[in-house]
Image (cartoon, rainbow, N blue to C red; front, side):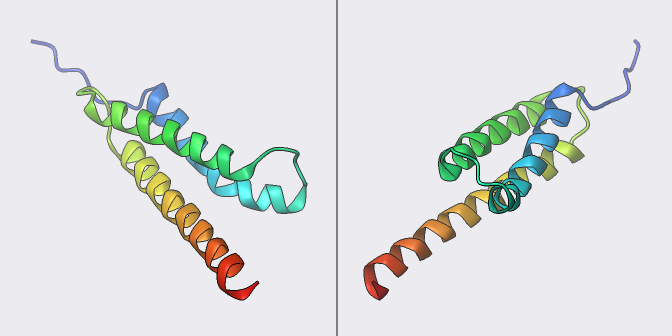
Length: 96
């Protein structure tokens, strides 16, 4: 019986890099005005990162650290986006 060493696959690397790019997207958007909806891009990217991370976590021959880190980062970004939207709604409703 041959035991294969666990290693990272393209799923973990893609989820990790996409998660880092999503975390940097608001900063990039503030520096360079890009003509697209930031919230739609964040939600779409977060869904992709969560999906890739969960698939990588379910693979037996996969190291788990990058997948867990990407999943936690995506969930933090999701919370940030929801907080941002709720504060924006609060500001528009009560202050203006």
